[in-house]
Image: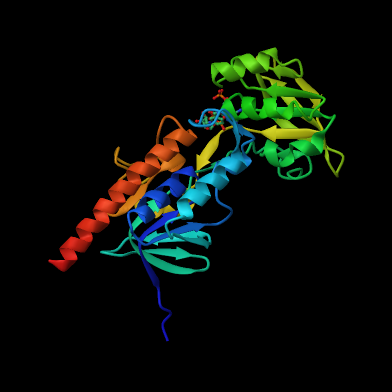
Length: 315
Ligand code: NAP
């Protein structure tokens, strides 16, 4: 007996701000919608301490905002299905989405899988992950109360999360490979005026050291002089950028040479009926507001696409 494959108008892969907005728009337009997500809703918001550049809120915690997005997205009857998507097989009119928990079909598929954190790939990083090495200040910051904290990276995440960590650490030192931060000016100003924050410039991490149980220091090398030093560390937070979460979709030929999904400005990929939105796209500005904007556009485009398909089928 062949297993019946559940069919939807649209399957949205990923429940971050972009995917949840797409779900809100498409389910509110009366389409049948499934959100396939391997974890809890919210995407990177879950790992974000404070958000103060999303309109409507002076300041809101990432997990709280994620919860509001989720409640809004689910109010018009979308299905939320836990599962890891393994592949998308394009078809006409139905595309097939193979998940670790089953197979689903939909007329339109929206890829909203976002990004994953980049690792440093230095000795000690993997060994001490969860034992001092972390990629999430909001999850693990409180473990390092009164201890020296090292943060690696110079972008918005490193500085924003570094500032958050000052409430726990005895000190928070930012290790950056250049002598200028990439982070927004407002974050830089706050970091430079925070008395708990220090900076190690022109330095790359060569090793994360520990006592076998937990992290004890970070070994850095000065890029100008070659000099090495050990910086004491209770916790090490790594924020050295992000990589596209597109492993399962590279066969579709819709990604650039780094793996980000290419779309037009209406979120269409080069495969008819397959769309993408949010951080997973090849784009300049990755913010909650731009992810939400993408999600709204894709919602409207998917609605029109499915309507056109339905009208063609009937005529
Ligand atoms: P990012 O902006 O790509 O910054 C990554 C940082 O890590 C850069 O400073 C980079 O150095 C450094 N880096 C990269 N590879 C490295 C390596 N192998 N070793 C050492 N350092 C390395 O990434 P992000 O900070 O995670 O931010 C990701 C996106 O989210 C960005 O678009 C950002 O604007 C957004 N975001 C926004 C907010 C906010 O608006 N409040 C908060 C968080 C994130 P170089 O500078 O030398 O390249």
